[in-house]
Length: 193
Ligand code: HEC
Picture 1 (tube, helix red, strand yellow):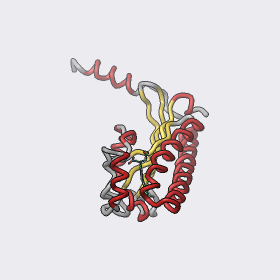
Picture 2: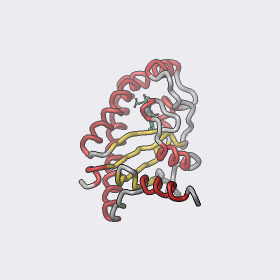
Picture 3: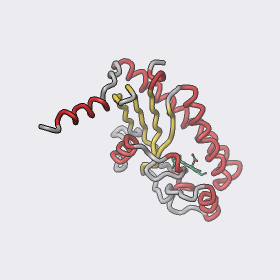
Picture 4: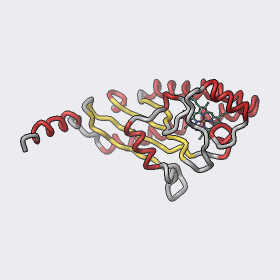
């Protein structure tokens, strides 16, 4: 029992923030879903037009510019941190934090729910910096993704990827596998808006 008291103090320090009211959680989950949908719609449109005009090797540069730009803009507009993450990232900035890693590890075996929709997780947390709300949605690998994330990538495309991303870990995927996730993190004043 000697060590019980300091241990409790540390726990309280990490979990001290007030909880979010349930209606706030529901509103943040709905806003997160809209942000995720906007991210995917915009990026897929940019990717499709880049693929149609220049093919996959040229589309890599578009993807490299557009994906982070969309994430930045949606983050500024919402006040949340909006990003894509992956267990095997192409962009080193997409490396997961502990929550994202735990969530994607749980989804790896089955990225879709029984209704065939990508898995979603939301969680209201109390941290030492106050309340936070996390929302994630799985991104499964589709057929069209394989030209840049699959097992048999054309040599010019593979060369363009390794020139731009020397630490790339995002090849070798098959259709249906978990490619990554959208991740939205609300903290501070953004929780109120
Ligand atoms: C033209 C090649 C290309 C195609 C096709 C493509 N991607 Fe990517 N993907 C990339 C590039 C390049 C990046 C790194 C973007 C960046 O720097 O943020 C990336 C990054 C990602 C990331 C972010 C995490 C990470 O690994 O950096 C996810 C998730 C992702 N792609 C999923 C998909 C899915 C799902 C599809 C199919 C719907 C797809 N991609 C199709 C080239 C492609």
